[in-house]
Length: 368
Image 1 (cartoon, one colour):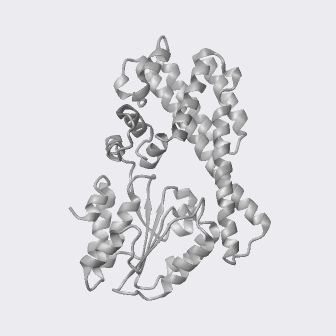
Image 2 (cartoon, one colour):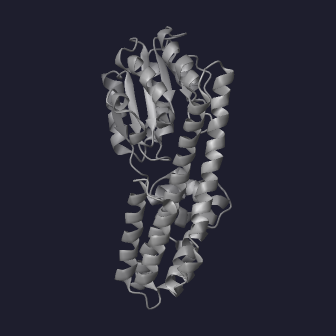
Image 3 (spheres, one colour):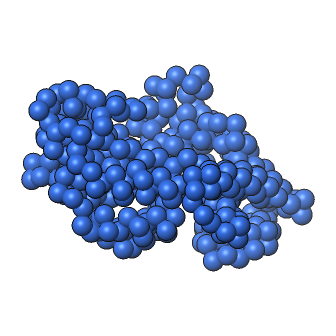
């Protein structure tokens, strides 16, 4: 099995597309699109190594150096964001301007932009000319988990390579192989709750992830007990706000680094961009908390109908059994639908606090 085949072992469509591209001659720009942890990064490194090897005097040596992480190959440029967003000047210097220089060795250069959605609009617009009229020896690989974070003008100029969510069994095997010392039941739960997102599964096994699961569980326990007036959902909101504040601070620090590099930006622009990064992080964590609530309600419905085998929270079956006793499974499923409706409503910039309060009082009326 080649390195590219190994990197795309669980991604049949991507494997076929990339193999065909190498046979026909790779295009100048690709968009690797799929959830975090689906293997985009490993596939991009393997694909880049094959592109460089095909144009090298010593293909085996070029491939070996390109596969190293970080790679010492001078014609492989790998750009990952420092902090919440890519620095504008780094995109300009290391990709846009560097793409004009001929290869240091061999006949090709490969530029990989990881988390491409973290490029600000200014960077994406600047990258357009390189995508439209790249030098013959340049190949650009954009990696993204969020298609909506990319400008349509950027995405439309790239060949799409789609990565599907990994099967739960694959995520579970990856987590177990990492030797974290976590119990098998918790690993199984994280793998299923993550819906094929390996990075998310790893997050759920951290202290922050465990706390988020506890928050979701407490919110629904309160709804079942008729005690939502104690506002247990505020813990979800506070945790999301903390994550947002951390992301805003990281973005502000990155912007200050740009200022040191000579990129001028007004104080208002710095403030607005940092706040955007904070809002995005806060919204993502709050959405994850609600997704965990919906998953818990789904599990309650499964246990209530005697289908424990399909429950996600394998590590909390005793709690699920207790809460599912005498519970109407149809009401639990309806509750999961209400949670999903709230997740969609939050995309419309409604008040997060009011939306959560309304949701859990509705759940109390439905389930309590």
